[in-house]
Length: 315
Image (cartoon, rainbow, N blue to C red; front, top):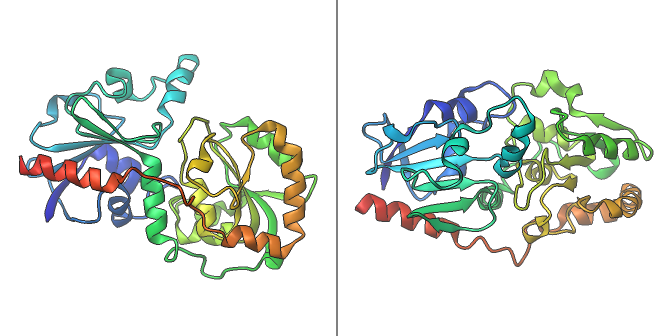
């Protein structure tokens, strides 16, 4: 089936056309992330489109048409920032401020990174974005890899990949890790990756592969708010030092990363990091373990996604 796809200017600007670290690698990658790969997509104008993609900059749903499939994309931690914005000089996410999570009756499918299960609300389908991240990883884990895969003895100790400074926990853990060995900041590679995508660009993967460990803390914490950061580490064959979603092990094998969610475990974690740092066999066990949990269940989200699309198109 060929589907005519309209991508709103806001979505293009955020995910595709801007020349920054936070965009997708290209249009092809964006489509493979967001939409079922069962179909062929023809980029279309709004009038002729079957599916229309919008993001949280959508502030007026009057232009949305019921006969089209309107998909709203948010990779943000909306619950956290909706509260935080009350203390900041910032209006928040425009669509959420106006419609909340699900009160826009023109949206058919929500792709949300702040929910942890599929839901049907007001005739709309809501899909957790973590399912999308994992699906993309499972389809590409043998395709995306460093150009030269270093062995553990060739790697430096640790890299801090956060540049936003939104999370002070990162500074604290970096201070503790510096007592073991030097921690670099990814800003030293700005000339190399300043305009490369954080969504698994080969340039980024090459850099992460230079290190045994990556400080992989989310900018904010909420159950099932998980971003591309930990998957970048897996593509790069390095070990994430993770803090973020408390239910991370619902999705990710806990023998593939170091979990810093419980502050009481920090001392034990530092001892474990020292041990792994000095033991190539143990290090390689972490690298080679399957990343996604055996009991991970995505609720057959792709089937539900496809069924919803085909039902609406046929109607």
